[in-house]
Image 1: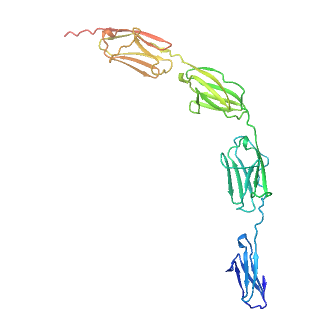
Image 2: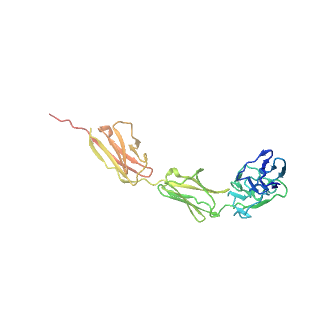
Image 3: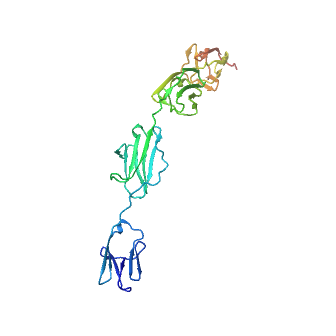
Length: 350
């Protein structure tokens, strides 16, 4: 403010040699002989040398605007100490009184470096330190300091990382023997009950599917293989942490027996013949074989075989005298025999 000797004397205001213009950030006031330049919300950049020029005389003012010290505002909800399990994420955050203020993070007195699962963020006035997956090395005292000057305001957080729980197998897998087509269920008890486990079969990781079910009941882990086939036999393993247990699965072939057996057949030379049997269950392709005189059937275009569920048939087209003999149908568990007799075709006399 300056005061003139005459109320109506004109004045000009200058800052750092340039005439100022009135705005929201700079207000010029006059009350009789008193002239004022007002900075309603002074910022550091508003500082400088101001001149009130009345023509024959001038008044000089040097203005210095200093920033207020950075302060930490109300604490956020992060508890201290912050206790986390191994592998869990950690987020430490605080809010400053000025958005652009620099901060320095330290861990147990050493500057924090970004990388290897640790990130630093600035979100307006908030400063955030993120640990993606906590490990034992991340435990300790974290400090966020406003600037690097000694004695600057700071805020500290204590992070505790729990010791990883030791996974134990309370019981081992038991070997199983099942019949072909039956279900096989393996069980194992683990501790703690929520421990992560992996099932393997013959060294390959098992995933759920139409024939594979995995379940948990408290501390029990259950693997069920539905409708076991001979090819499912092998080693089943449950792996938990650094421990594992294995057991063998044996699959016994179900007996393939003949419910309806071969019957003797008489035919005339040139006729088509069908030999037929019925099995107690549907066998896989090749589960039964046809023989003649105890030997595999010869390669002959007149011979053909077919399967329709439980029914197995042998067709002989246009039988000849050489076809007669004993025919058999065999499985690994049963055999049935029948005699084919062929009569010579009698010539018709005219």
